[in-house]
Image 1 (cartoon, rainbow, N blue to C red):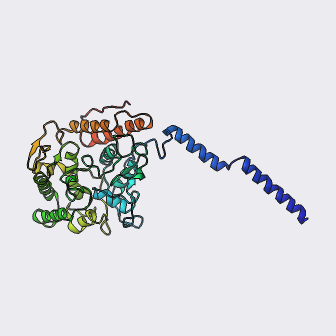
Image 2 (image 1 turned 135 degrees about the vertical axis):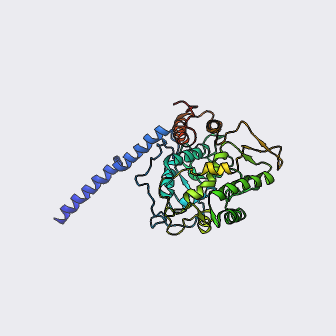
Image 3 (image 1 turned 45 degrees about the horizontal axis):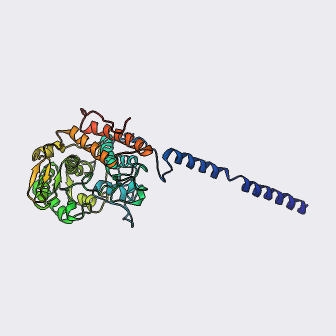
Length: 380
């Protein structure tokens, strides 16, 4: 009886083993087929994806605890990317996006909505602006710091996928807590500049950073760069991002349970230096965008331009450049920058460019330029 059972078992095992040699595991076969089909759609480029549409607004739009158990702060590990934006740095350190600082535009939009309650169209506008100029449009990945292999294979030159740290696009001169690129490091926390941030908050805000402080500090940082940076440039993309940078801490770094929009210095240090939500931090009580930007600009109106001839204190206005009053010029400048990076895109890259430019326009039009007509440099 035992011998008979052994023969049957041996026969079954042999049959199964022989079949597994002749016919690969079905799950593995299906997975390989899915990969092959995906590669055929994306040109076989590792990590290539068909860029998805951006996420819409979240269901719950009120304030809530965001420094919670699901998002603990963790220190940086070797190879993690951090850059000039304290908000994105903080979200990465708390795991709202990948802690290595590389994510897709959709992940970033979801993160700023969840972590800061940023208004959906503003989130789409700033994210796709950065992605189009500094991201990898084939793999749909963007670094919040410098260039990294984690965004995938290099796009065709002159595109670079260099991340937020690339000067003159998302990042620019006259930052509040980051030095100008001319001085060598445009993305690391600068204690001297933060001391000025604190000093102005004490002088004009009774120890808090508010709109009055924002207007005075923005103007002073412009004067600093004019006086010290022979390559100082303040126009086109940098113009709106600088003023948005000035109101960002008031709109997003103040606890959502507080009635007054003023930022204390301990919280400011936590975000700017430590890349960390203050303890028990609640996000804004409602979706918020670029509120206050016009007030800050009106305190010290400034025309776009820059130092010329490689000399300090040699600021010249550029009448052709866009500013807050000429949004369609800004739109054209961003389009021209993108066309310069991608002069002859084909295949998946072209398809993703078309989609990403449309997503960017939807955010841009809602925030800055409803009268600007959408343009299609790569078709529709």
